[in-house]
Amino acid sequence: MASTKTLLNSAALFDGVAPLNNTITAESRFVGMEFELKPSYGVDVTIDKIGFQSNSIQAGFNLYLFHSSQEAPIQTIPVTTAVARSFQWITLATPISLKYLSDTYDVGGLFYLGYFEDDITGQALKKDFNFSRGVCGTCNRNAYKIWNTRLDFLRITPMYVANGNLNGGNLFDYNDVVHTSDNNYGLNLKTTVKCDLSSYFCEQKLLFADALGYQVAIDILEDIKHSDRANRIAEVNRNMIIRDLEGDRETNEKGLAMRAEDALKALDFDFSSIDSPCIPCNKPSGVRVRAI
Image (tube, rainbow, N blue to C red; front, side, top):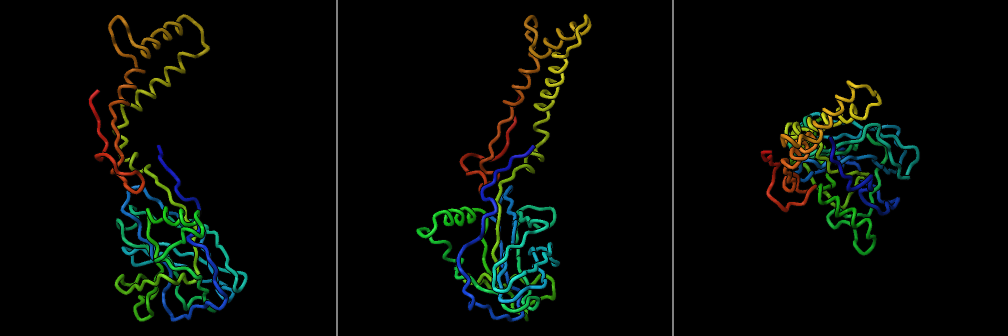
């Protein structure tokens, strides 16, 4: 059982131009983006592609994804580029999935996606874009809408950690992170944002047991009822099946179809506060079960 809604589909983080003289002076830092997901049960942010632009061809360096609860990187992404000064999208062999709730890392926290400046050749190129101001609403309405939709689910801020505060190739201290709203460090991203409540429904599967059990029984009996096997035993069985499905008027016994309907009515769902970024809050929270 799944309940998934795509809100943004592989949308670029921002647009703009990187002047060829907008080079970033490398200072042996870790540079990149900080991600903070809104507290949410079902928000799933996927980074589908990563773009990079520098004034030199990159024979190969690594991007690292850290989570604030894990010392080692949780994902390493190799990057190569073929042309100097030209922006290039890198298709990921394994898309990067960022979740507020995960079995791999702690609840909430922060993600850091970036690279060590000593690993790249030449200098990255900086786009003329300021993350604190965001997208101009009168310049590009579609980009403005995408930017604000993404803000409902996560915050993205450029950052760096100075060389003296690095911990080798492991996670650095959160207090040593410096936010820089006007520097993308040559990076751009394409992200997909989904609301996926499948895990919630799976965890509540026992609430569906009666309704699903009745439905399975109905499906099996309907198949038998419509079987082409025509003999007296089959006909007797068919009459019994009809009684089981539709009920017995003489005894007022409910049939399976009515029992299944009652079981579904007994499930009173209210998802409004389960996951407020995905489902607007307008009612008391929870899933309630009434007696049949």
